[in-house]
Amino acid sequence: MTPAKGKVPAGRVAAAMMCAAVVLASAPRPGSADGVHERPDRPVARARFLMGTRLSIESDGPAPAGALDAAFEEVARLERILSNWRRESEISRLNRQASLAPFRCSSDLYRAIRAALKWAEKTGGAFDPTVEPLVRALRLRPAEENLSQPGAGILEVGPGTADGVRLPIGWRHVRLREFRRSVRFDAPGVGLDLGGIGKGIALDAAARALARHGVRNALLDFGGQVLAIGRPQGAAGWPIGIADPADRDTPVSVIQGADVSISTSGNGERAVDGPGGRIGHILDPRAQRPARFDGTVTVAAADATSADALSTALFVMGPERGSRWAEGRGVAALYLWREPDGTLHRQVTRTFAERFPGPARSLEH
Image (cartoon, rainbow, N blue to C red; front, side, top):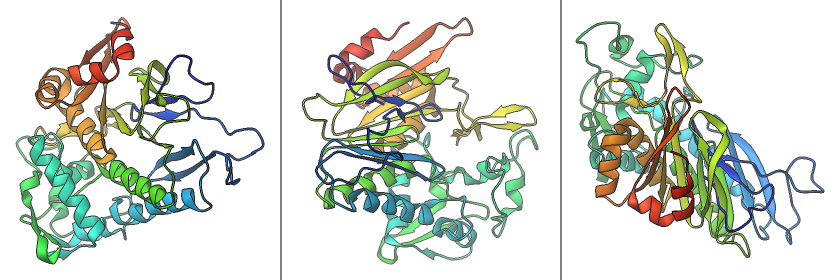
């Protein structure tokens, strides 16, 4: 994800990629050895490792003392709630208990689950937070602690290990009770993984923290997803690079983003080695296997939560079905993939082409 009007300022381009997505190539400014800028009358740029990747925040204007720290701490707090990689996170405790009895959630976890289920319904299950059984069956968290839960024996069965056996995946397995803020699973072995929407939720929360401190112009880059708040002084937007689907460090185009989140999904970055070869981390909930598309999809949306969920869902759908789905709903989406001979192909929705006309047209075919 990235910006640009006329000449792109040096050091101000965020290269969009995540598992194919977005990387901020913004270097520390002169006078700072570590990228931390504390003078209240100057722009600020800092980064922290959170949720398994790098979150960088750059403010174009003055940032009050503590503003960026507040944003980082909000993301760290949500990680302790939403991360399946932590045994004692709230969602890990929910996964161990919710098939036995209703689990009463914090307001943050309940809102996150409700948002995830909303997108599961909207996308017809292409995005689905109940893929946790498949994540475990495929051992996509090889370093995780033993997070076994009641009835988890079924999680050892996955694609390729027993034909015809289906895992308990499907968003309708999750029962919400609003007035008690509780979650219950209707079958043993059901589990939630918010990896396809969690970074978006965290980015929106970080943006609210910045707003509370009076920050009005900032670029947040979270390992494949960008949230552009306002725009740099004198520019049409923040520069955001659309990455080559075959090389996440090489942008094939640059767009400008203002008051938008751009999320790119692809399987290149977090694939793991399995018995049959590399296994991508983006999963097809209905087929109960890794999604088969071998490119990337970039989505632009007004908020980071929507962009994150949509890029996951559209990746699972693939270019043909996903483009039709996005076109019919006015979603700004761009698919990119390379043929074995190196030819770059694109498929772009009208909404994306209208919002970013130059870059959308200039991408090589």
